[in-house]
Every structure is written in structure tokens, then in C-alpha cells.
Image (cartoon, rainbow, N blue to C red):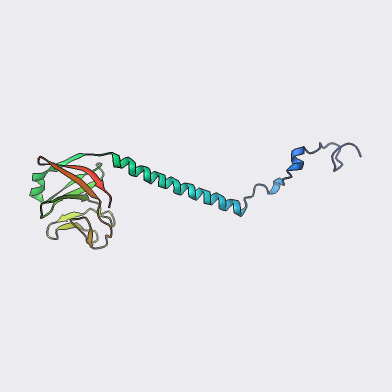
Length: 172
């Protein structure tokens, strides 16, 4: 035999040293084992959960420090009608303000917590009525009848010199 590798191939070069130290069968190398897949999925799930927590915490602290104040109407208009509609904190968020029989000023998001229908003030029931499924909220924003189970988000109001301002939101 002539000079060559151990297979007796005269035209073949000898295998590099690293290939002798790390013999890898390349045909099966691209397959992922079950254990590797479980590790990957677990790590991915943990990273996604951590990202969700960080986002939730960041939104809590960012919105807590910012105060959006908006003029929504006059106390005289509220006295005359018993309630009025306004938008807060953006023009896409409908809200309703009501003067209770005790004279207290309250306001809530007008979006029902059941299926997002608009709630309206019902003077006879002394509450906020959702006509979609006969839901009723008392003037504390809590559900008292129908399918809604969560309270309405409350809008914080301030009354200054006969003018009413929305100054914040409280989550339900």
C-alpha cells in the first residue's frame, strides 16, 4: 500500500486531529433531542412570563405618576339632568358622571364590564343600567343585578368653582 490514511486511500488526506478527538456523526447531528426541546420550551416560557411581569409593573408605575386632568362640564348641567356623559382619559373612553341623591358626585367608565355595552343612568333604579343584558350597577359602581360580576372603573373627579374636572382613574 502507498502512503495515505488508515483506510488505504492513497488520494485521501489524513483526518485532522480535532476530528479524531471529537468524532461527530454529521448525519444525525441536526436532530433535536426531547430533553433539549423541553429545556428550550421551559426557558422560552420563563422568559415570556418575566417579560409580561416587567411590562405590567412598568405600566403601573408609569401611569401612576402621570396625572391627566380634563374639564368635563359644569355642576349646574349635572344638577339639571342628574347625569352627563364625557370622555376620559382619551376621546375614545366614554364615561358617565352622576350626582347621587345624597349630593355626592361620582363618575364611572360607561363601558359595562360584562360585554362592553354602554351603561346609562336610571333615576328610578338609582343606578347605572346596562340595556344589553339587563345589568344594573349601584352608584358605588358595584354590580347588583344581571350578568356583570366586576365593578365599573371609577373616574376621580374634582369640583372647583362650579366646574367639574376628571383627574384620574381607579381600576375596578
